Amino acid sequence: MKITKCVFPVAGLGTRFLPVTKELAKEMLPLVNRPIISYGVEEAVASGCNEIIMITGRAKRSIEDYFDRSFELEEMLKSRGKVALYEKMLKIANMAEILFVRQRQPLGLGHAVLCAEPMCKNEFFAVALPDDVFINPEDPVIAQLIRVHEKMGGSVIALEEVEPQNVSRYGIVKSQFEVEPGIHKIVDMVEKPLLEEAPSNLAIMGRYVLSPKIFELLHNQQAGTGGEIQLTDSLKTLCSQEPVWGVVFKGRRFDCGTQKGWLSANVQLALEDPELRAVILDVVNKELNQ
Ligand code: G1P
Image (cartoon, rainbow, N blue to C red):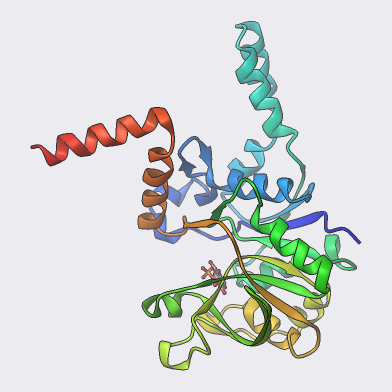
């Protein structure tokens, strides 16, 4: 069965970005010219997922509004002859079928994924954490995971090798062997371990293809690291019952979950835009020549 659904947990409070996220969803912060969330949705759609399920919370209405039609704006743009902009607005609203489900309590990533059970209970589905922005227009990362699922069956997780000092920021996996270069059979994993306790330096990045079996495990999952219901803990159980593959993805990742990561992603991507590059270089040069 083809994977057509992608779940986006977007209920997080964005405390790392306060006060800007007091009223604004962190997923709506701009990454050059579009909100962060748009990059993930574009990646999912380019990977064949045309049903998007957003697990939202309070103060997240701006995400719903962004992907909705805006008749007043559309009429205004049309009446002023701004056809290209009008079409751009329509394209955003027609990007995908998007459902919104409320996560009523902030109980963790595992609990957020569990909120998608009514929509995904009998099929494999993708999960994308929008803080991790992946840039690979030729081969979107979710599509890379889906290909491994189609070839090998089972669940699939995106992996990246991280520096020792960053191990404790991620879920870390234990690989039994590599079936082919960059594709690991996962036999264990631990959420945000101390460096001494980490089974490797292969970190889980925010893209998954999950078996519907995960819901049964999440129902019974006790709170783990940070007192939250962790997806990693249920995946640890899943890999003892069903195949779970780890894929060292091809492409670039920007961590937009911290202010520093978000700012450097903006600068990096602006430097790659022919017009904005000149703006950044101009500011930096002036600063250096002062
Ligand atoms: C989540 C997951 C973690 C994963 C990380 C990737 O953590 O729990 O396993 O490595 O995303 O970004 P968070 O960053 O939401 O605390």
